[in-house]
Length: 183
Image (cartoon, rainbow, N blue to C red; front, side, top):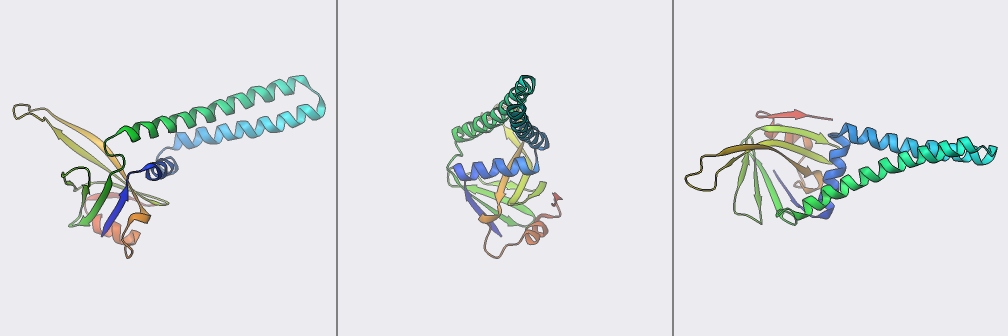
């Protein structure tokens, strides 16, 4: 089973949207509160104009500014994340992940390195999968003994899978060594 995708603008926007939909509950809460504030402000503004009350008009402006500010902040955070991702050397790379022998093998057209992911966590999202795994970074010099680890997430869009691949087949191929969270 194989999944291929290009890490371009459309991929990053889908990645962020799915990340918000499945992994960032506070982001969703802030968005709901912001849109609720804007809707409440609109209702208060209509009431203030209909009843000619200055105090309700002031409240409507305040609530609208709070909601608009929250929406602007969420938008800016998303845009900053996208700008950061565009600056990475992997932007525009064609990535292929092959499932075999209970592991994911990642290759890219930007590097000759092959990344074998043997264990981690799979999280199903409405339009794909998130794979979260630990990577080990060794020192680059022969005399450098430093070792560091980092937690990495990759988004595998369902549209990138082979034609015959199903969600259940993907889970069964990796189920032994991966913690799986389904919708």
